[in-house]
Every structure is written in C-alpha cells, then in structure tokens.
Length: 141
Image 1 (cartoon, rainbow, N blue to C red):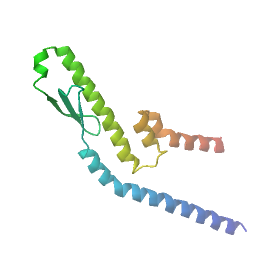
Image 2: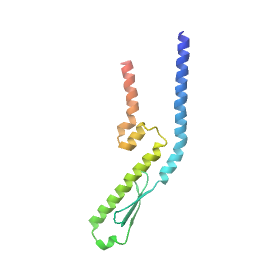
Image 3: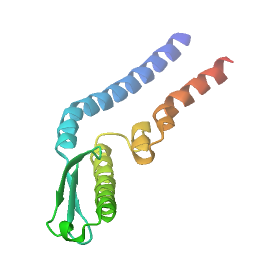
Image 4: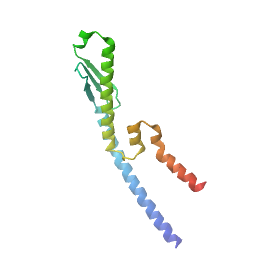
C-alpha cells in the first residue's frame, strides 16, 4: 500500500516538475526577445507648448532632449529647466508603463517581478520565497 502511495506522490511531483520546467523553458526562450524589445524601446514626449521634446529608453534613461528655437526668446532658465523636467518625467512614466506592458507578456501576472515593476517595492521580489520559508518553518517548527 505504501509503495502505491509513493508512486502516486512521485507521479504528482513529476507532473508538477514537468509543468514548472515547461513554464521556465517558455520564459527563458522569450527573454532574449524581451531584452531586444526593451533595448529598442523609446518613448518621446513634447512639452505642452511644443518647445521641448524628450526621448527616454525603457528604464527612463534620457536618450535625447531637443529644444525648439523659441525657447531662447524667453530667457528664463528656471522656467526652461522646469519644462524640461516635466517633459522628461512624463516620458519616463510612459516608458515605465510600456516596459510593464512588454514584460507582462513574459512573466506571470502575480509574480514578484511584476509586482516590483508596478510598485518599485523590493520586498515583492522575495514574497514567494518568504512565504515558502514561513511554510517550512511552520511545518518543522
């Protein structure tokens, strides 16, 4: 009887392993494609008056800032700095959303990595591991 239970448990474990390994292989095969898409991602935003154009990459890094000739007429450096900052911030926010959308096609929606991308909370990266450790302690403690 115990031998039958062991075989059933082994079959269930093997089936679960096969499922997890299949998910891993699918994820791994798509990472190269994802990496290329993220490297190519560019988001461009213009200021409300069209005088400032900012282009950022997937991580919000500034790729280019373009200034229309009209910005030199005002000669208010502080106002120009604020305009550039707001434009870059809007472009960065859109890049973050675009990055999340791209990554969402490759990761499970409830994964710690997706939570981290949405919230910036580093704790999200370890939540599943923390829960597993807690379960282990509860079972053995």
